[in-house]
Image (cartoon, rainbow, N blue to C red; front, side):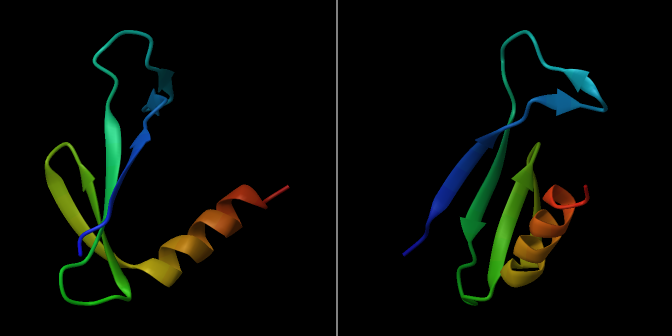
Length: 64
């Protein structure tokens, strides 16, 4: 089973996106390996280890 999520992008290069179309970051399960996720941005797909992505997000949101 493939699981996909879309997350709205709010800024590009530090500039707020105010006009449509609003871009989205897509995150999907990996076809073979449960420990991986696939991130898609502008048609480019990047495969990363899910736990490392989760850790990076926690670190980035707890810096203060």
